[in-house]
Length: 255
Image 1 (spheres, helix red, strand yellow):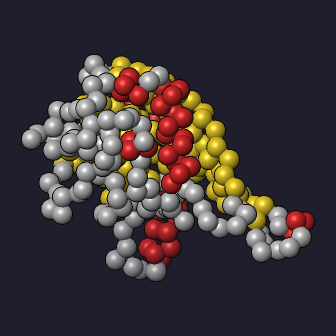
Image 2: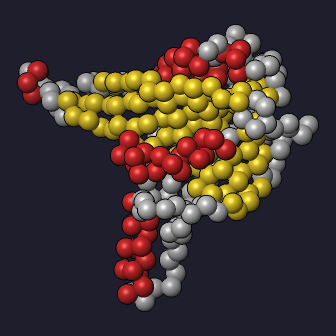
Image 3: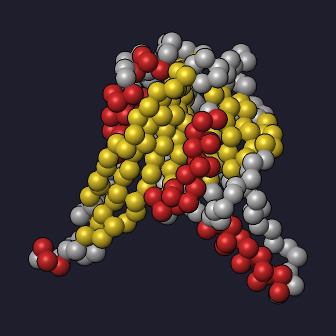
């Protein structure tokens, strides 16, 4: 099942961010989306195969009431002028309301694949640069720690393995510094957690996921774009996911 992440490491990352995220407005401002279509070459992701097969089946049944994600890979631009950020997202992804993040999208076919944006409260943080977090390697430790905190389980026999894969710092075309962090987390669980004998408790892999974070600062706030995808899907869609990461910008918010 897809893991919907409701918090972020932002609440742990800096002493000035003591009160966490601000409460969502029950009547959120209108965001806008623009089409910026970019076509993929040579790679056909599994969601397109699923959509094509399903479309063929229903066309043979004569049904005209079903619609599926478009098979061409492209992006839409999400712009939030009130909170101050913008990014591209795959145009066939759907927005999920009430997921706890400032904005949340997920793949309609690969349910473990999603993205969200978290931001610190404007009343409790006074960030000037993402470098306030320390170097990317230090920020990555905080990111990983928060992910593991979110995925803590009370089930017997559950074990998590995690690794920081890459950390980097870049200056984007807006002149701001952004950190990019990638981690891998695997979850294992015993097939018979109540068994008395150790040989009867055989661990099995539950899930294996790649988590990608982009951190930026603006408007005296810390922003985090988060992407989650199964490792086997990441292999197929790495170029598109990195395009999303590279598109993230913090902009001046409208007060």
